[in-house]
Structures are given as structure tokens and as C-alpha cells.
Amino acid sequence: MDASPPTPLSGIRVLDLTNVLSGPFCCHQLAHFGAEVIKIEVPGRGDLARQLGADPELNAADMGVSFLAQNAGKKSLTLNLKNPSGVDLLKRLTATADVVVENFRPGVMDRLGVGFDDLAPLNPRLVYCAISGFGQDGPMRSMPAYDQIVQGLSGVMSVTGDAETAPLRVGYPVSDTIGGMTAAFAICASLAGPREKPVFLDISMLEATLATMGWVVSNWMIAGQRPAAHGNENTTSAPSGAFRARDAALNIAANKDEQWRLLCEELERPDLLADPDYATRETRKTNRHALRAEIERSLAARDAADWVARLSRRGIPAGEILTVPETLAHPQVAGRGMIAEFEEVPGVGRPIRTVRTGIKVNGTPPSVDTPPPVLGRDTVDILEELGITAEEIERLRREGAI
Image (cartoon, rainbow, N blue to C red; front, top):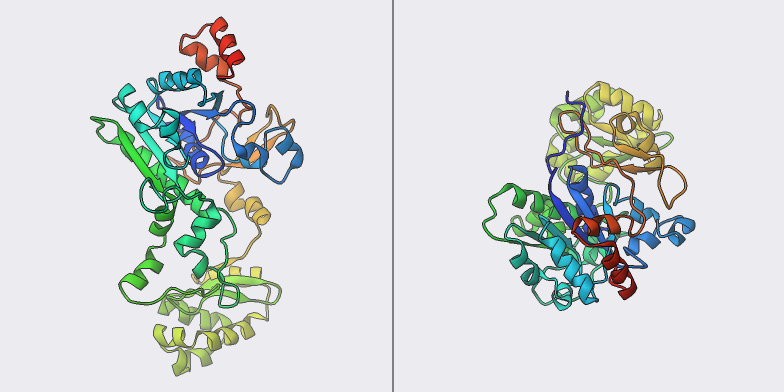
């Protein structure tokens, strides 16, 4: 097993002009695979995520939890793109870069003079990735898009919850995250392929979310089944969903006939196996609510964790339903290098922990060496690398360009 962190994107320079989540999450993935990610932020205030999160003191220090979660391993450069000198600096940087990522509304970068048509002539191998709510064209292209708006428009909220609670928002910014992951995948694919001319990637959070809803969407388009909210029930099989035990709920997914038989054995319910209402997958689906009541009657004899252990030993898919703190402390997560720890974090004043990518390469989790940066931490170093003198840097600062 290779003990050194894999860095397949080593030597790739990414200019990250993004804010809050979809774009920062995209570039977060790229940084973990070795890309040099230069986060370009507005002087004085930076990424809005610097002021977001559950710790007011960190928000006031421009190191909000929402920023810390997605920006480890990046450099921070402040540029004012409403200043001609700031625009010139971005263009000079673009000539040295492989990738530009932005998540402004369509047209904003063009109005600033740094859109694809402005930057592409400066770098024949440029991959320019634009993440937006709805894409670069279409009747909604200019509408503001936050995650919750996209969740509602995509149909996600209509199938989340149950008949009493739907429409219901997913409990984290799922469309932002999917948009960022889709963008990272598209960027890596573009970098791997031949680039005879600059590449423009148009990432729609709405379409990216729909692409992950393949089963739900196809049941409507192909089978004519209108998607609905079914709560914790898996509509493709039964018994499959969340069931109440003596102390708490657990998930059981006895999707195969052999798993169904083993479940009845473990519950000591031969009567369920003999009942014609539950004889086949289709009859179990039809009578799922009555079946649930029977199963929960038996599950009430033991605690959820006990049932999970017993069912798992028999090869019946089962799992506890955990809180986020419980999941992070679980040895399956804590023991696999998923959590990064930074002891020294300028601007924060205490150690922090963040999650990595959920990927292992040759047994090793991709990681980054540096914590999330304070605003503008690397401005001078990056500009000096471009050949800009200390006197010019001071002039640019006085002008408000940096």
C-alpha cells in the first residue's frame, strides 16, 4: 500500500472564483487530489461563507464554519474585478492556469470583462467551468438560485418526506453539493482528454440534481408512475425501510426473497412466511403497511443495536439510524482517515476538524497539508510569482485592486 498521498492533479493550477458552496466544494475535491487551488476573493470581505456557520465569533473573524468546511488546502488571493488593474491581474494569472471555476449568475463574468470569451484567447488549454442554478441559457438563466430553490424546482422536495410532510427540504444543501461534485467530475474528464482548444463547461445545478434522480425520473418517463413522497419506505421492495424496535428505529432492507425468509426466521415468525399476503415481492409491496406492523410487533422485543447485530450475522441488510455526531465517532468512519485535523489554524485560534473526500486511492485518503486560509493570505506571494514588484503591489493595494 502506498503510504504517500496520491496527487494525480499535481501541477494543475485552478483559479477558484466561487462563493459559498457549489464552487468551493468542487475546488475542494480538486485540491485534495493535488491541484494548486488559488481562491480569488473580493478584498475586504471575501467569500460570503466566511460569515456563515454556527459559531458567531468565527463569522465575525471571517473564518466561518461554512468556509472552513470547504476550503482547506487552498491559497487566498484578493482581487477587485471591478478595478481594471484587478481584471488585468486575473488575465495574467489565467495565462498560467489550467482551470477557471466560477459560480456567478450567467453574464456577470462577461460584464466584468473576464468571461470565457475574454479569457480563452489567453490560454489555448484552458478549462473554464461555470456553475449556475439553471445553466447558461434558457428562460431561467438569470434567476437567482439557492440550494433550496433548486431542490424545489428539481422535484426533490416533492419526493422527500411522506404524505403528511412533503414537500420537504433535504436536510443539507444537496443540490449545491451535487452541482459541485458534477463540476469536479467534468473538470477532471476535460483535463484527462485532448484539449486542442479551450473548453467551456456549463454546469446546471438543476440538471445535475435531476441526473441523480434517475430511478424516480425514469419511473415517470418510462413506466408512467407519478413520483410521490413515501417517507422511509423503499417503494421497490418490502420489507425495506425504517422500523421501530424497543428503543429506537433501525433500517432493514430485506429486498431479496432469501433475505425475507431469513428475516422471518430471525424474528421467529413462520406465520409470515406462510401468509399468502406476503408470499411474493409484489404482494409484500401491496401489503407493506400491514407487514410493517407485524414486523415491528416482533422487533419490540429487543433494542435496535441488538437487532442490527443479529440480522447482520444472518446476512440481512440492517443498520442503526445515527445522528451526525454518532456517525463521525463510529469506528467505520473514524478509523478510515475520513476526518482531517488541523492543529494550527490562523484566524481561528483553535484546532479544527473537517471531512475529506470519501475516496481512497491505493488505500490512502487524498489529503491537503494546509488549513483554510485567512483572507488574502497568499496575495503577495502569488503576485511576486507573476513578476510584480513590491512597489507595484503597494500601488495596487492603494488603488483597491487587491
